[in-house]
Length: 77
Image 1 (cartoon, rainbow, N blue to C red):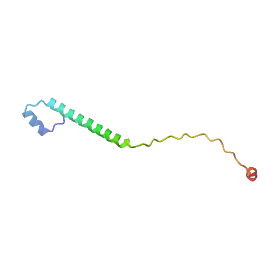
Image 2 (cartoon, helix red, strand yellow; image 1 turned 90 degrees about the horizontal axis):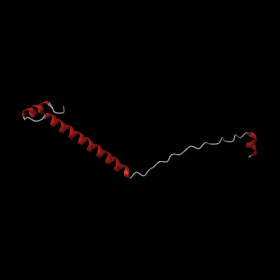
Image 3 (spheres, rainbow, N blue to C red; image 1 turned 60 degrees about the vertical axis):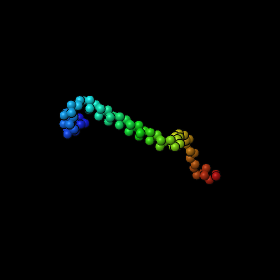
């Protein structure tokens, strides 16, 4: 349970439905988590708004084998 022992004593003396109280606490924790996630996503989206960089992938072209030059071809040049 999320309720500390000292608070449980107070709850029991006031005749509060513990299950209902626990459900409310869990619901509040869930809502808080959802809100934090939404805020994080909004912040990330806002940071990316000004980003215009879109990388383009270069495809490698198959190179034709280079001509192997021997001594005679070198001397002809």
